[in-house]
Image (cartoon, rainbow, N blue to C red; front, side, top):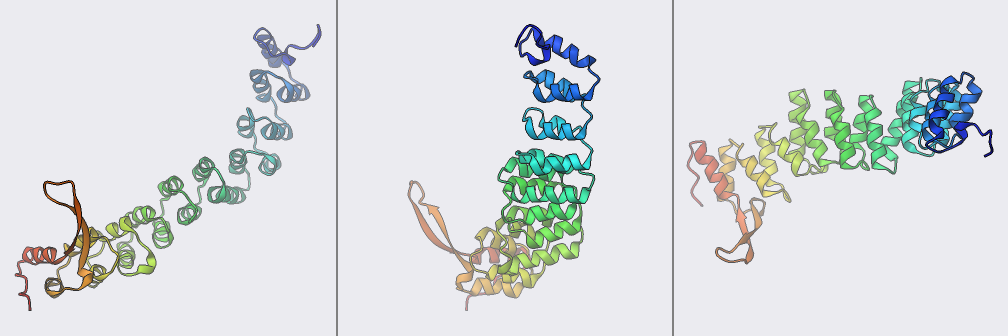
Length: 302
């Protein structure tokens, strides 16, 4: 480098204090920009960048310097400079951060939503969700088929509006999200209506968690009976439904019936052995127990 090479152009422990002192004394933006963009020492580049006020220079640093990009973006407020970062940064995390600082908030939120829904990296999707403040957009993330569990969970945790929980409960394909949303719907009539739909409408594609939650929020006897009659429903859920039924006639129907809808197969262990077998069980004993709990005797077999 030569005898008169400036200290900021060197990258050794002895030169760093001199370089930092020189940067501290600099006042010309052109000099500071050059150091921020060209110094080989990261501490020196960062010290110079902190004194740069030119938006275009900060935007270039955000795009070109992977070690200072976040610091540079966080110093930007100029819309054109931030848009430059959004359009040119290689790292999607930096594009998302720049979008969150755009003066046009609605445009920024739309860019962030796109990242939350489509970015290849889950960490970026989560970062994007953290930067979304539009409740409808958060709900959109939660109902998106391609959203992974952690992303859905984070989106749900940031929703506060009951109407968005209603939307999620009706539209999301994620079973745990259905349960979460159903639990947080403020309108009890809507909560019960959606719960009934989970129990009786196969087209809702509600899974175990959602149907378990639904059983908490409806006592509709017709819906409960229809649910118990449904095929391909876990027997534990049918048992929970029977425990809420007060319709004596329906309970006696279960007791007297050999309908396959009231039967289920269950793997059992043979006592005293390590062998298992599949047994055909039914809901009769649970219906009988429910009748007795209601103060009624089960009907005699016909």
